[in-house]
Length: 84
Image (cartoon, rainbow, N blue to C red; front, side, top):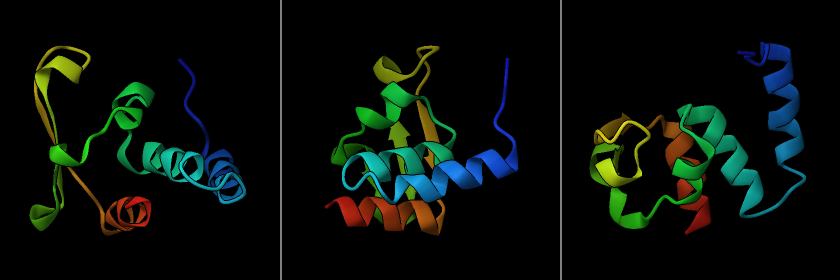
């Protein structure tokens, strides 16, 4: 399994700004959350707890079938706010 190096992530982050919405923010959310592509792409506003900066991923959408509560960084919250 290969993991991107820091310098590679930096290049992807920079390039994501050229993609525009919704693909640029999607790429940045993938980097910021470490979540899987389908989880981020399928995110619904109902899964977000903005007051707690938390993303509740329901069991039916999680890979192993267990619900997850993913804390969101302030940068992730900003990316989501920009999508509204």
